[in-house]
Image 1 (cartoon, protein in one colour):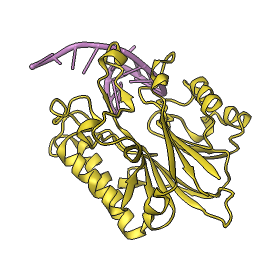
Image 2: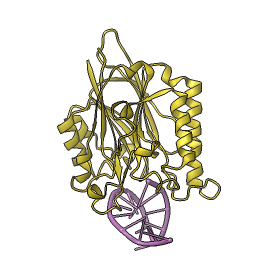
Image 3: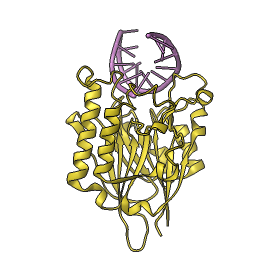
Image 4: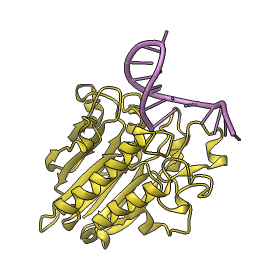
Length: 272
DNA sequence: ATGGTCGATTCTCGA
């Protein structure tokens, strides 16, 4: 069977529910992971998803900030969330997907919204950057101790870091810009090695090629300037590497009316 | 070298 799984920082799911509906209608992924839903669980627009056949929904929301959700056509066995850095932020949610494979092949799926980290890339004077670094340390430690990647597992989300030189429009210009500083890149590397995880986007697109999933609202003429960054990620466990079978980065959606600054990223898996 | 634009919720903050 084939499984398609998407991740999208929607920057307010209520404001952009029509864009989500368009995406789900046109691309019809089996599973969609959202970040920055920016609403309480009671305010989440469940009906719009139910209408499109996404009847399995797990939400970890909070008022005004952050918020993650997983909406799925495929049943899942259980869901949970972890409060990284014990701040009460809604930045993680997990489910165990139950695709109809024979024999049964449950897949642990984790959806993350890593702290952006503010502007100043110095943890001594910028508590938001210190929080980001601590969050990454905790992710790596959790993966090591819980052996997350030793089963069939997938990590997705807005990790707010562009690790490769080709993940940003100018490596040199962004070396001191939060999202591409050496310390963040190193810590993200430790997280990926703690799996170890396979970077599904770079499995499909060689590291020599520029690859972006986000373009700032502040950049006029975003497409022509093309000053993007690859902040959104999908990583799979080694056991799923051989099943990777396609990637779609919907750049066009950045040009839709009142867009998110992130675009949806979808991977296809062939589980046969 | 700086300012540029969004969204949720106020007369500001986080991204």
